[in-house]
Length: 239
Image 1 (cartoon, rainbow, N blue to C red):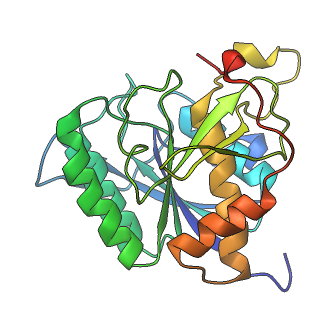
Image 2 (image 1 turned 120 degrees about the vertical axis):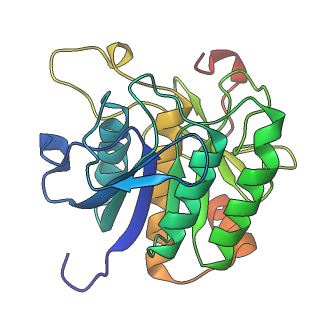
């Protein structure tokens, strides 16, 4: 990694297992945020409770290795949290120097939109771009449906290094939706879908961030410049 700085990427998820072989060589720091509403409790532990966060981290690290990871455990063992806890996690990650914030999660509740929008706006003012997973069936999902979020959808036939712009008013892209393979198991036995697509999109944004300091609008243009080929039909999108 000589000659290249590391981009700090925050992963707000179920935690991370730094000793996983897919993360060998990755610098990982982290903490947990607990509580349904303020005041939240911050603790040092961030061990992955489900494997979801570790899979997202490995997906990012495989696609772009010049990152350092800030693991913020906001999900409990049932992969749930509150939108207020998530909003606080976004603010804390931005204050601690995250340049990219990966949000492979979301809320169906309309009431979550405004608190998340406020937190994401503060993060953007601090220089952090938020990348989120869109709903697999196209339903409203926050924070992915916020205009200041770059969101990701997945498709079963999208190769790892391909990228497609999804038409519409939101900055949404279609990316590879599978994690790193586990030897001896088919990909569909593991986690897959928009969560993994968001991780791959976060890796792309980290690479673009390392090369310069684009504005939000410039970043979208840079991603669009990287898009390849014709958008696959949505009938094969991941459920």
